[in-house]
Image (cartoon, rainbow, N blue to C red; front, side, top):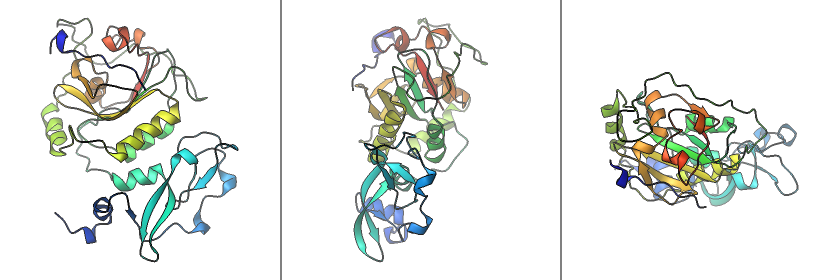
Length: 297
């Protein structure tokens, strides 16, 4: 890819379904098929939760508590969706279901093949930032192989969590032998296998999906970030299945921060990208996007 092809992201705001409840749910649109709701006796007690179990925000007169009728956890209004449920005992009914249960049912874990998933990412236009534990939990519960990525951008530290010190060290070699000022995206040793797995899911260039939109919205709200995205990285590009705060549907792989996480298969957390030799000359840092804080897993 040459310089002319480079685009900087702009900132702006078959089987029988009768035997498979998940397949049946998808076949009936947004209706979730369940055997039964969670018994109220097994709901989490109101006294045990001062904050939403998902976004970690404090409850208040304006942020009310709701019990998820599926798992029994206590969540806030934005994290509790009114969903149509199909129950053997009563037929179709409406109930509040937390976004974690919605995502878990609509997008069950895919088989792990040992191929690195793309990163869940947090980026910021100001140095400093923090990592929220539920992002790692969400990644581990709703991952796919081949390079799914969740991206966030926040102008400030969104939650009262420990600050992450700046990172300017990486333990793998960087190749600057090309026409750009920043290093080449590192080549994955299992790239052929990773791409084969990615293409087998036939997800690239597919329409928007409620599940991925929920992931983006949840991550953006939980961390008060202006940019969030779920993306997949193929041979040449990082394609966004869903995003908040991005105009582009894709960016070249040669400017993608997430390409480094695909290579390392390890989380990356950078408090100030201008102090990290992998990213300090990247156009996503020096250009309009001006990304400073970055985290991915």
